[in-house]
Image (cartoon, rainbow over all chains, first blue to last red):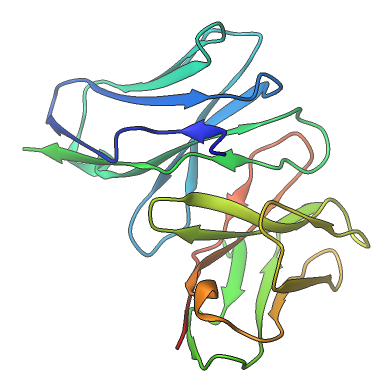
Length: 114
Length: 111
């Protein structure tokens, strides 16, 4: 029972273009969503988040969109750079107080081609 | 800038052996976590500790035990390792309501 799904295992994008990573969830109790970036042999690092009271959050080249009715979120990276090549995980949690018990998707490997 | 430090980084165990993964954070975080990452599965929560003195099961706790030794340290123990526990293990920590920070991972192989 995968509550958070990333249906694209990999994505290849040309440098300078837009990268769009998608994530779907099934649990309507989730109210906080995050994207993590992971390089090989390193731990995941936090990238951007969004609360369910918003439908968009922007931070520099990164924008996360949330469509609650469709239970779908996406991460847009524009323009894409070679250093963006990594595995991206979306994650979701219920509430913000106390311990955050994140539920992760399977990850999408993004490759930025020069 | 140590952040979250976990040891060992690599370990090979024989089936039935026991071992403990150590984790320490220097950010004065209340909550600590252990996740495992398997191919095609993302990260799954094994155990977590919301605050010093408390521990709770996550999504996949079977075969593991944990100890929150103090506010800084949270260890994960495999009492009798099985090949299904071959994985990459990540320790993490957070302050309530804020970002979770992960360690660099521990690669465990059980043969």
